[in-house]
Image: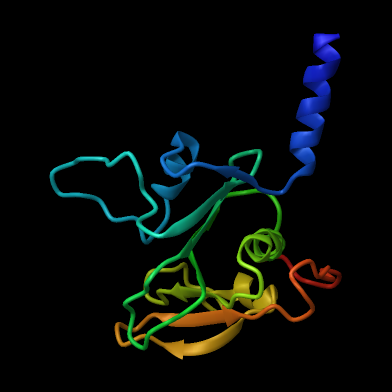
Length: 174
């Protein structure tokens, strides 16, 4: 009986795209360590929490192939940004990046109904490809300008309600 229960729990887990975890989760930290925006202390210390202040939502995929971090905080970027920030999206393997972003949006809009979603892309530090932030663009995000520090701003507003279904047919791999 316990073997059947274990198989059922595994099956349910694999059906979910994202799993919420706490800031400080070791698996999330391991994925975060590979992200280009990860800052390391010169003295080598590793704080228990890695997301930063404000409201936060840390998501990992069941296979630990990707990490998504949402933050709602007082952003001091110039020009000032409001809404919920995608602080980190890192994908090593698994589903298409655009599909992961769409699934993460649904979770964000359940928590922060109707809020603008935004992210920054450092075009100098991302892999050189056709368009930096391409996976966000494939997921329907739009360019929204540049910060004074030279980061590309992308944004998305809820178009059809927080629980909108998205059609991913015909999207190329990213």
